[in-house]
Amino acid sequence: MSRIAPVLAASASALLLTACGAVDDIGGGDDSASAKKGDDITVGLLLPDKDTARFEAFDHPIFEKEVAALTHGKGKVDYANAEASQAKQSRQFQQMVARKVDIIVVDALDAKAIAPDVRKAKDAGIPVIAYDRLAQGPIDAYVSHDNELVGEVQARAVIEALGSKAATSEIVMMNGDPADPNTARFKAGALSELKGKVRIAEEYDTAKWSPAVAEANMRKAIRAVGLGNIAAVYSANDGMAGAVIDALKQAGATKVPPVTGQDANLDAVQRVVAGEQYMTVYKSFLDEATDAAQMAVYKVQGKDIQYDALTQDKVDSPTEKAVPATLVPVVSLTRDNIKDTVVADGVYSVRQICTAKYAAACAAIGLT
Image 1 (cartoon, rainbow, N blue to C red):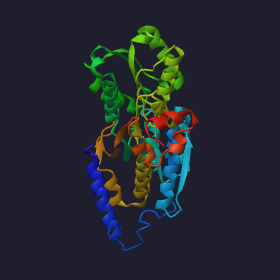
Image 2: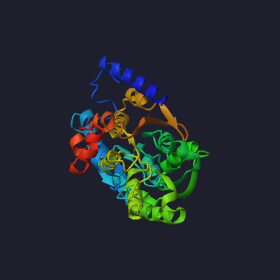
Image 3: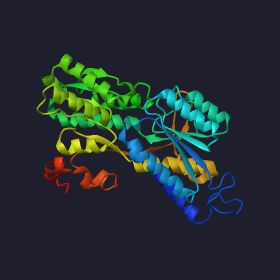
Image 4: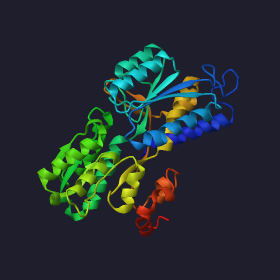
């Protein structure tokens, strides 16, 4: 988390400089339009799927709103969702290059497969920012979270839930899509906490983060390990967590063992309220999407001081070293801090969470 502090400090410094009229106004012109580009810009945004609720519900609208705010309503977002198809995302990417957008922000379905498209964009003079997942190829910057920390936070929750029984417990690991570079980081972080503390009875990768695949794999795990022997399930995200819980219930579980998640989807938060899902990792959609929009606009407009203030971290991909990055903090969301996280940040209202089905559970934890 300490890596975030320089970003916040540098951002504050940049804001002070902006307020004093000292940023990027070398020629003494209007700060709203740099020497490179004015407000009339087009930002390409490529998101990976619609199964992950956050992308359509939060990331896209937040990103679009911030671009509009930064460009006085003149900037446009050229948006496309790949709907879990790498071939479709590649076509969408190439179409944006052909349309000569000013910059592309991409959440790559397959980090390696997207590299040739990133190269084509660079050859066409179009910068590329990797969003949420670290794309390969000559990207200009990266916006995401400390993804190993995400796995660590999930694993710590498992250990905490098992308590003194952890050492003798068997758990199942439901990892994400191996084509997603974040999957390896989530897994590495989780294993750094789990190894030597619990027994990993079964472990699965989940193609395209598919809940259907996760549910089928959970059924396999139940047959292999035995329903009563599964003490907890490490699930890398909320979509899979819901499928895992469904499989456990269908197998006859009267009390669902602790199951982790990630993304703070509304249905996952409701499962946490109800005690069916132990936790989810809340990653501020507002911060991530806002930072990405700011980086894109500042990059195109040549506002180097603001852009540099947002990219104080550095990450390595398999093809690039020291990629400028911003890493947004993560939080373990449990029944104890729903009001202080997603409700306080305006992601969901108490009314949205506490529908009739969950009213009693909400009342029991003081979420009213």
